[in-house]
Image (cartoon, rainbow, N blue to C red; front, side, top):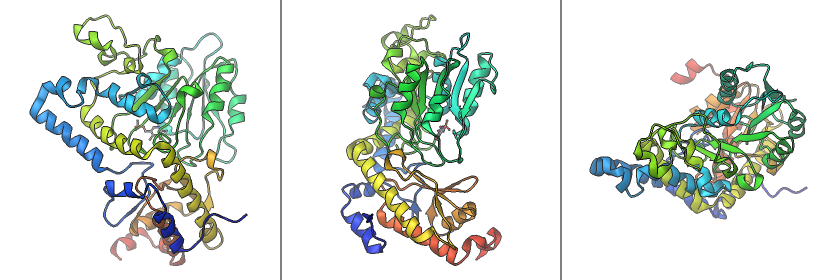
Length: 428
Ligand SMILES: *Cc1c(COP(=O)(O)O)cnc(C)c1O
């Protein structure tokens, strides 16, 4: 089959010229002299996010306590407001999403809310390729409910240490399973799981299911309501470009608004009655009811401007460009870097619909190649044992940058730069 791509540098430039999202790049701060392909770990600052932070600082300076109700976006409602704004990206109702806590805190909040071991149903089903913090949180959830954190945590195995087979996950959903908790996109291989299928199969067996969507929201469109997920959560600092360690999002299907939040706190109180200061907790019948503390206004502020950029570009257009970029990267690696002496392997599904926003390039010298790339101004990241993750971000990366990094990898291997000991590299 003829590829839609060509190998020349001119072709990369042509793709950039035809790119309808190309103008968004000017709205971001690109670190000087770098090709930044690490936006799946920490997205870059946009001018829009910077403005929304500066606005809040100004309001703090001029309004002080009055900012809670008189800021342009009153701080008292900011978590619900920004949740509603983000709901459009994930196919949810405005009151089903709230900006609160952090990713791992939200795992605890929602897993504890849904995990109620009963006579036979005591197990949580996750997977062995999951992000470590998710597994730690699940084990502590089991322990806190008096369950064996190893025996009762079932980890769906991977045959190749890259991918999960959805059918095998479904086979593990049985009458002992109380809850399924999985990632939308695997952080290492970039495999996108079929959430709709998994949710349908879980529900047919009477099991609740939630997803950690940290690696997909902002780059992959979601339909949480249509897929009928029970809950989901995701961070704001990867593809959403909301700032390092910023506040995070959680989604709770409205079917569950009457449930009791496992970790109660005063900002989950029914909004208009919160300041009656009753000591009897009554949670808001919305995702907002699952808040614990006062919203972190300063780390929420950039997310406001950051979301504007994503919404303006449109998640469907972002996904289209993302798939074109990752397909182009895979094509170039196949053409330029797959045979000896380069020996790079693609560790990401080639089928577009099974792919998130990054490409895993596997190489036995991955760590040292990753370091050599940094020395050449390319920021990617390395995940043991052998994966260089490359994330071309539709809002600010170019096709020409993809072309360049593939050719820098080629030069690194040609010159054996990855074989030079680190100490010598630093002085040379
Ligand atoms: C990035 C990421 C996290 C980060 O957790 P924090 O609590 O924000 O540090 C958690 N889970 C997954 C799957 C992630 O990709």
